[in-house]
Length: 568
Image (cartoon, rainbow, N blue to C red; front, side, top):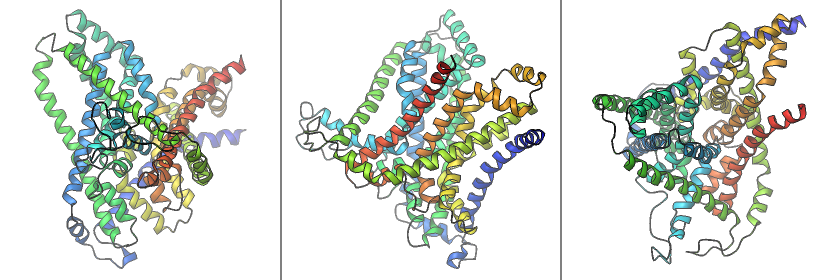
């Protein structure tokens, strides 16, 4: 018993260091593994002289300027659009029951993987998609599909739509999560009431009182969204142009090319991708300074009304369009998965059948097995590391520092397409042939931050008096942890586990690169089918991508209720 308690104490004490090391070393090692080939050092090709010929070859690529512009423009505009609509929704429905209703409607969108969301939007805006069918021929007069370039338009409008619709629920729920915290939300709501009592309209009161304080808590998630969207692969690959694609998609294609000499060009592209992301973060910082300077006098001018009702009506229209777009996209994907012959411009298929599902189930057994094994393994490791690190924090009475908090976000802030290539190169240098373990470890880098952020607040809110009473009765730390704290945290642990599984289910690029294309999952199959295969088969795989995380979130929600009834 004494040995077990000692081992537990040592494990808890070292767990924060292990967790930080698991996040920092692979990312920094991956960046090193990209920088060396980018500057010419690639012994596998006999290149051991440092130079800039990789960058010269990169900038000689036809269309490279457009790749950079697409990557920069689509990520900045989509993030601004998502943030703008989020702020409008919060301002219009603050302290209104509609805000909770919108939260319930948009919450499930979070579990939809990016690839599935892109496929659904593609089905909606395609020439023969659900959108054109909905208004044809009674409004448009179209009897045949229109000749437009959506998706895959050269300006990246499809990418902007996909990224904005996918990231908006995330930003909105982050803001609502901040407002739900008693020490923050209560103060902000009281300030809003004071502003109303002074004659400010609710909308103006929100912009002048709530938003300046709320934005500080949202800044880091917004930067994470901006960094992710700048190097996203799934949505641009499915919705974006092909000639040329965004820089991230081009880098992936060069890296996977049979011509190994393109690895140097891909590494140089990854370095430029980091610079693109940094320039986006600096641009956002510049926008913050500009808005702060321009709004300083407005915040203190004492004006009570600034077109609040007009903004409210505009927000109502935007919210209705957004929710309708998401609903029609999902409905169109469900219809395609059961559609037989579907002539244009009929809104519904001429015949329904289950053949596509039956065919898919016979072929997806291996991808489904791989998806579940990788997701459960990476999530279990993330849960264990997170619980031990939080227990160490509580035992030492030291909250994780700001630097450590930034490290937890590190895999989310640095473009994954940059360090993943280097990480694969490191696997090759150590001759790691364990493909499954490589993929699980790579998924862990992305699952761990989300699991930690999901569990941290619940663990820190545990009343320390429970532990004190148990310790006074002679219970050792290990017994307090296993028999007292974990049962109290069963619901947050299950929610964090469901979130970790959802993050793992959605990983496309880490699976493709770390698995060297040899491990197929539901996500890799869905992306492959979305580019040129049958719409019906693609819809089935995309729906499976959504159903898997939804199933585990439902289980995470129901299990504590079942356990509490059993105890009763």
